[in-house]
Image (cartoon, rainbow over the protein chains, first blue to last red):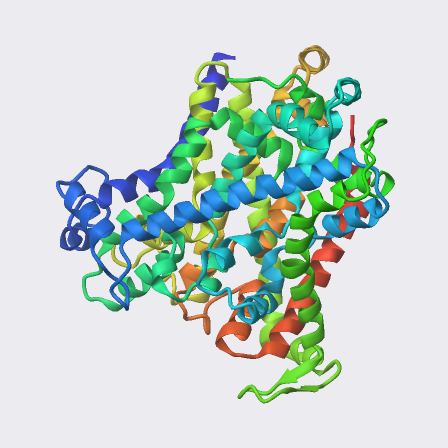
Length: 280
Length: 326
């Protein structure tokens, strides 16, 4: 019995080593100088250039047009993450409320039209989606970055299922008290959904922050680049130069992963709950 | 910290992934809401649905119809209109040796990524479930890679497999393997698979662990009494109980390997797709945005849509039958 436990711990520790190791190496290496990394390889101990590397990466104006900084990319990532999460929650709560709490004529067909969007991910219709955005003149705008990503109805199904689990008696009681649909929504449904909203917000924020393909298509103007979108540019510079700026590449990668990782760590319980009960 | 009273009611079955199935399975039979009491209002439901429906129409249905339509046309490269060509785009694509070899690679890639990320996730979940002390710490440390974007994971991979500074290249060299990621087709494919699996392990770990922890204690105790051998107990009791979770994850992982690995691949091939392994989605992107082949890219999009449909139906019709739901 005792021996098997030690073996279990060994496997788990090895798992932790594989999952965490590369991140630690990236963090440590980013605090060394590029020439040093080039000569001595990746680092597992902190170097002395943490602050100046990160200051450079955050504030230096780079890119082809010279008007994008790390800070700006970080702000764009935040806008995308928060905008996407908030939009998703508002849209899906409203739609799910209509589907669950109203009797109306086209309920079935509406349900199916929403259901179908679950089957086809954005990746299979990228080019036509891009054409549509071009027609609407939405490329290089925050609207174009955020809104099309909302066109999948996962959140709606998630809230629909949750609303269906709310006891009918609540609505009966509310109607006896004379509450209308708006009042019932604001005073009963929204407070009841608070934990669910928090959980889904975390998942959606991480999902939005981590978007890559769509921002790559939608934004050619560098002032709209997100951190994750900027990764490719970093690599292109990396490939071209004699002694690549490994340190700056790692610093940007760390910046791109810190906010979502922190959120997942801090709100772990809600995050796991939201994930296992909803799926994005 | 607030606890909504009906939280647990969303999930009556032990395996939380069950919610997903109910969503899918119950969909055909009960599209209507289950409420006994409902509001009766001629306009309000449409008002509430309007934002969602508008976005779905503009950004889902319109592009999807466009994809199908333009897959039958040949676009003039200089933008002077297009000609109807019938099925020519499809036959061109399906007769192309390059396309077929990419399809083959996609199949192998998807199978390997799905298999290894499921297997490693399950192994770690079973071990983390078995121990009492340190359980929460392991959990925290094992899941954070979930929050990393695929292209960032790709960048980490490039670093680990770098010609000059990559430690994994040195490990490979120790075993006599001259690994050249980015130059050698098989080596690049290997690195891509490793990175894609690495990125997906936490997701599977979370679901398997929550599935394991959902197995009721009496069931575990009964199993322990009936069957002393840990391995046999796992195969005959625990694994069948995990089957719904595993089935759900199979779908999610297949979708992940097919579509979400785009970022990993894009970063790792570094714009030199010619002699590097790529997947079908990447090919759609290349032909559409680099090659300006609207018709061909659309035809490929439609083929992908059909593959996704067939896979979904196949998985539900055939695999689900063998899965035990408790």
